[in-house]
Length: 90
Image 1: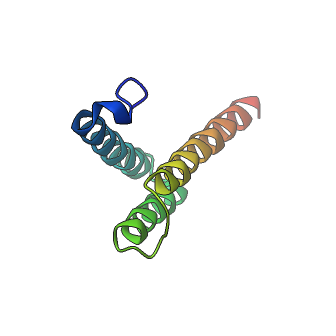
Image 2: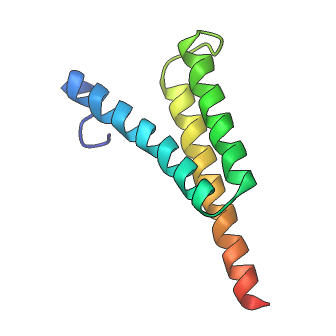
C-alpha cells in the first residue's frame, strides 16, 4: 500500500482492497484455528466497521476504516503476544 500510493490510481485501489480483505481473513483464520473467541469478536468488529463505511453510516474517507481496522488487528496481535509471554513465564 505504501509502495503504490494514491498516485498509482487503480493499482493502489486493488492492492488496498486485497490487503484489507486478506487482513480480515487472516484474523478470522488465526482466531478459528486457535479457538480464540476474542479474535472472532475482533473479526466481527472488523466487518461491522467496513459495512458501516460502505453503507455510509461511517462518515469520512476510506482512511478512517483503514486506520481503525489496522489498529484493531495490531491490538489483537499485541494482546496475543502478551498472553504468550505471560504463559511462558508462568
